[in-house]
Amino acid sequence: MITTDPISKQPIKADRALSISPRGKLAYASMLVGAIALAATGISTFALGKAPMSNWVLMAHVSAAPLFAIGLALVALTWADRCRFGDPTSRQSGLAKALFWLILACGLVVILSAVVPMTPLFGTPGQHTLYLAHRYSAIVLSGALILHLVLACRGRNCC
Image 1: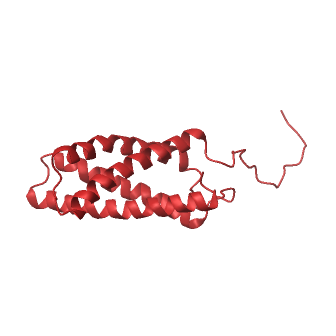
Image 2 (image 1 turned 120 degrees about the vertical axis):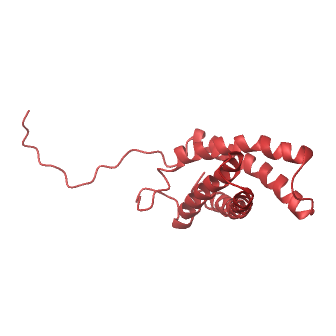
Image 3 (image 1 turned 60 degrees about the horizontal axis):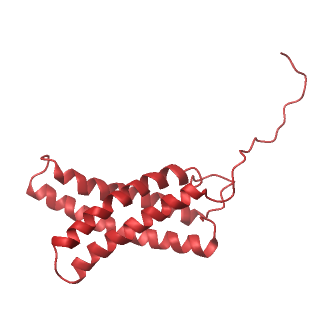
């Protein structure tokens, strides 16, 4: 089929909703609930000087981890398109996008540094290094989550 209609110079824009889908909000909420439970159990033992975790605190920490991990994976799937840098249709600020990608990167480090020591690949010094990576990336993750949530609630550009 041949046509003689002129080609439009206007770029084709995808018709995307301006707000995050309900699934994306649910994913963010599950990640946030898991992160709050993990931070509460992790920080409480450290702040009270009772490290390392043991008994019911350790069980609560380990039980909340899958909720956070699944929520993080779903957030990555549902939010990544909106948080691309250079997307002119996105309503999110550059800081919100940077925090989003920092959350995903730190979340990956937190998850891997908790799972990898369960394998026989690292000796005692390696496990101590992974423990420190887990701790400090979790602190950065917590700060990034708080800032991202503040931006989301203040500007309503993420929710």
